[in-house]
View 1 (tube, helix red, strand yellow):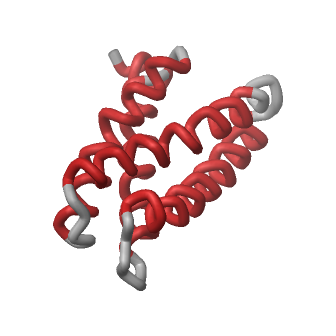
View 2 (view 1 turned 60 degrees about the vertical axis):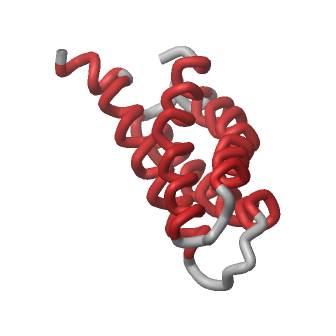
Length: 121
């Protein structure tokens, strides 16, 4: 999948999830929540894409290990960035839960739309 398609799919999946969760559970204004969701992805997606794409020549185990470690780092980074970007005043697990859920959903969408999904069709 080309980078631009992967980024578009990520934003298509994650932005609505972040926005709804931050508005409903975090009391963040919709425009600010949507902006924060796009900004956290623009901060993390290019680095993850670059780091994982450099693992494609090795073993499958090396690729999936890099992918899992990278996704964990992305979740942690996005959760940390949500507080200042969305103006969250909450203490607790909301940023971590939202980041984990949004990223899990986009990974699933990417697997279904990418090589694994193409092989099914």
